[in-house]
Image 1 (cartoon, rainbow, N blue to C red):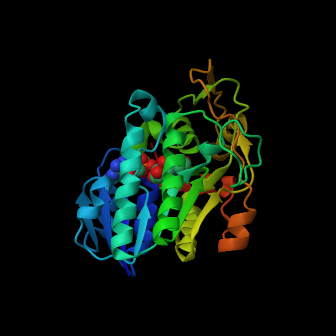
Image 2 (image 1 turned 135 degrees about the vertical axis):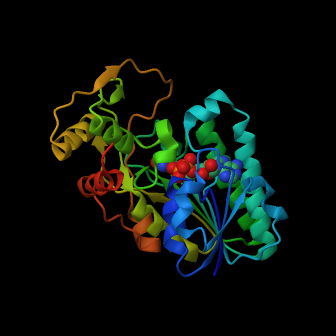
Image 3 (image 1 turned 90 degrees about the horizontal axis):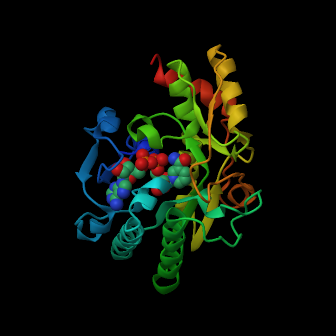
Length: 301
Ligand SMILES: NC(=O)c1ccc[n+]([C@@H]2O[C@H](COP(=O)([O-])OP(=O)(O)OC[C@H]3O[C@@H](n4cnc5c(N)ncnc54)[C@H](O)[C@@H]3O)[C@@H](O)[C@H]2O)c1
């Protein structure tokens, strides 16, 4: 198949491209805002890399059988610093949907569990989002515009609400990487992980390999559908630090600092039943196993 992956040089995009590149012709568009071409070095001879923006996708002359759209600005603070990014996300989504309309192919794109901010968990796809952040408003708009393309033009689109994804190839994200990965890097280097507030905030951590499986399963979706991509269990940041101490054989205390962020996400927990029943997706790698995998992957600091 001819497959386009936007954001394919980013963390989750790299995990996806590496799994697709063996059997498919893959084109990556990435503006390298947080991504890195270095991530794709193993598959450079099999993947066409275009440094560019998702919103310019309609200009591509290629034909595609499938599009994965992960090329979004990927962290909430980026949008607080520059709220104009909301418009970039909307234009990027429209660019991808216009391309999909021309070539008549399905789109699977990354949405976010942050959409559930302030809503009592477990989080179900039919929850009504609250107004909390620029990052979430942009992704809600992307979901609704996708639904509109489905209604008007019969495009098949799956919006995948990722929970806290951690895994291999996160280095280029640095300070935007998942807390599980950042805390691992810190603690391996003997540094105290920094926790906002008291550490009782809870996250549904899901391993990137499982996320790739969910994305691939969603390519068969008909119509417009939204799916949670989480493990279905959550841990506090204090519990995360305890797990890392036990894995690394250390006794490092976190450094607690006053909460600097308004409308901070206090708890995420996926209700995984829709993804299980409709696309047969159930995350397999639990947090203990996932931490062991990334500890091996990132080696010595
Ligand atoms: N990692 C998580 O825990 C998590 C959770 C929820 C949602 N997501 C979403 O998943 C997607 C992938 O995130 P990630 O964790 O791999 O982060 P990432 O920052 O590594 O990936 C995003 C990639 O998209 C590229 N990009 C950004 N804007 C672009 C644009 N307009 N055009 C082309 N490329 C662009 C970046 O350079 C980067 O390579 C993002 O949409 C993110 O919001 C991630």
